[in-house]
Amino acid sequence: MEQEADILQRASYANQARVHNGYHYPRSILTALRSRVNFPRFVSEYRECIDTSFDKYYAIGKTISKVTANQFKIFCQRIDAFIEPAPPNITNLFNSNITEGVFSTKEYAFNAVKLKHRMLNDLEKASVKLSVNSKVIKVQETDNVGIKVFIESSESFNIVTTKYVFNCTYSAINQILHTSNLPTIPLKHELAEMALVEVPDPLRNLGITVMCGPFFSIMPFPARGLHTLSHVRYTPHCFWQDKDADVKTVNPKVGNKTNYPYMIRDAERYMPILKECRYADSLWEVKTILPQSEVDDSRPILFKKHHGLKNFYSVLGGKIDNIYDVPPELKFLELTRGVI
Image (cartoon, rainbow, N blue to C red; front, side):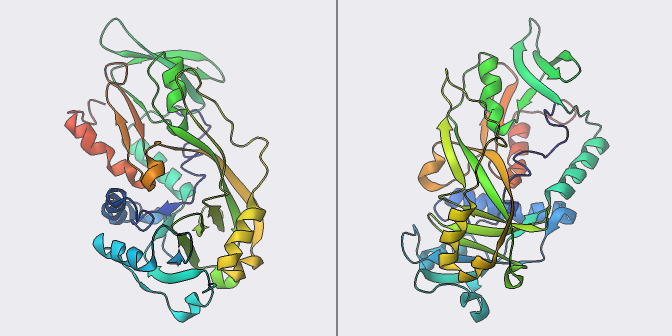
């Protein structure tokens, strides 16, 4: 059941499109290792959806960074991620007064539009029935073994009874739990902005991330032929946490004013050439994380079994490759594709 008119229209589209290879998580070795394990598998399995045409570099801020350049290098060696000093033509793009080190890395981006078509094809091959424009209002236990799912569409209101339900609605997980009178899950939400920019020619085939603190990242966004610009300080416009009696519903695409001027002014301190970027548009979405991730920037997957109802599962993954973390849980529960 998909509430939008098509699949992969919300958080799966409105993000950096980064295929993580571990570099982004120097303060969470487990998240980094999971990314390293999943990276080659994801790239191989969805090769036609992956953009490998750019070079990726990570830079370390000299001040207010939570890791040093040497610590970052050792971290990459520990997780067996490719790293070597960036060539002079790249390091010369940075302000050496506030940048400690720049490294060549290996990281790609995915094209969300191509991935959508691949997913639609895979669903059809697996004979999975997809219902779009179908919003799940609530779930309810039946007298027999099963769960009623109340679905609202533009044309009708339906009730489907099924043995298993998987609540994979990301920022809307607690909305369904709340309307179903089930216990909510502690979650933090942010109204997040990804600025879309045209970069100058020297940056056209580059991706840059400055670590690790209130810095920025600029990455190719294949679905639009542009780059995303995000900033740890300015991408989140506001945040809130769900509470049992207060689960908010936020439309991320209404009434927002871009923070791009703040993002670019800070980013160009590190890379003066970024002054030549041209703002095109912004992607807006609600970003959802587990509150404990604030400590080490980790991205553990949430998998709640029998959450308030037998055979009702809530699943939250913070990265595209979390798809590989779910099947082992399903196997453990002795669920097969045939049963599901």
